[in-house]
Length: 126
Image (cartoon, rainbow, N blue to C red; front, side, top):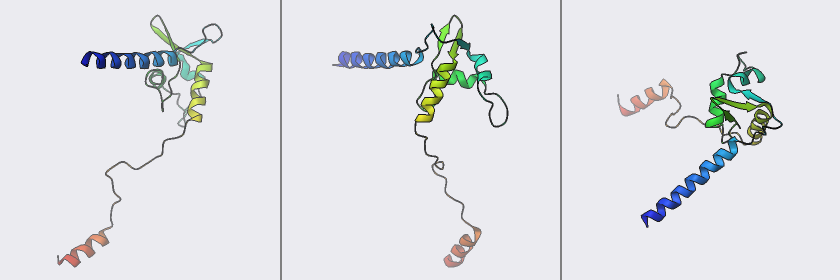
């Protein structure tokens, strides 16, 4: 029974790894021009501050992704590459996915005014 569970777990993990690999390797090497990841920020518009996006953000998008979407990339030798069409597909997918709702951090409550505290103390006899 334990051996069967291990086999099932291994097949599931291999399926996940294969899906992850397929998601990262959709760049068509015959038609798309490869761009080294450190050069990719120059292809993108600057942030609101006017600074370019850091290459580490693009590396993170190729490994962990952003909001469930992974930037397509290929590794040639010791250098990881992406392409302009891959960046376009990545941002298109992000634009189509629903935005997560912005909520307050858990456990934080709005601060009460001192007037309410004083009334509470007076009512308690203090």
